[in-house]
Image (cartoon, rainbow, N blue to C red; front, top):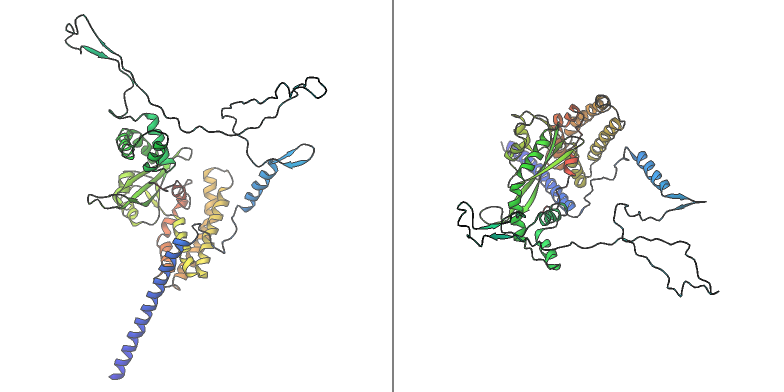
Length: 436
């Protein structure tokens, strides 16, 4: 009896020891990953990454550019590295001449102009700010003082120059300038307020914020048309990213909202829609997609899966997100299995490039994609399944393998349409950066 108890206790302690070892390994991975994300390189490349599949073409382009920079006179020499200024820029010509005394040669005879040297420099005038003073003429009848016209005011005022917002100083030019600074150049309102003060114009950040909110309502028909154009295309790529928000809720506390991005439209006219939402729930994606029927390419966020089950659109996975799982795991585990997975994904992109590099009809390219990629992906899946049995399910390595295997059906759906790519990087690269 005592022996059985001792054996049971030994088994319990062994299991507990294994559990604690697994827990320690998991926490060490989390710590290493957090350290890497804070202090490591942001570029997602790894030491054993193979050469780019288009390295030869890239080298040819570089060589061609080098040759283009050579100007042949009687020998070859490199042109100056600086590019010439654009011809469409306006020119202001400044002429510099010799004084009359300098135009006289030492022999006493006048010198003759034989040409001139022209050098170009770039100048800039800071933003020009001025006040539009609208004068509306007013008229009144000095004879009857409007008594004979009971339906009209005694004083008539000329129309025209109606403000964008009644009682405000904002003009279309000012609004466009402020929005370009904020949404294209990522210059927050408080910095713009400082810039305006520096040039002698007082425009408060509160006014800029209020104008933006008010005028955004007037742009709603344009935004709806943009969304219709995005939904008219065969593919919509979506992503969401957290953004810090001041006083997000009624409590007045700061919080985290989400900027939702949708990229769609046609190949010739792609369009991107940004929409802020206080959360990451599926309802926000459903609001935009509506009754859309086509392909929706996203990461593995489960909210899209819940929508796809009852929607008319097909959910397509993203290889870039699958690759990121392996990349993050490799940075903390340094496993040969992870390096192998990254190399195989790189090979996938190389084959995709081979299939698309020749300008053929969509059907021809689709056939070439299937011929090149399908056998490779069958082998890749077999390797993933076999390798999954050799890794611990807990930790970044197991997470990377489980994610890719779980997403496999969606990861293969980029075969289903010519315009689909292995990932939604075109949406990710549309730039949800520094949105403050």
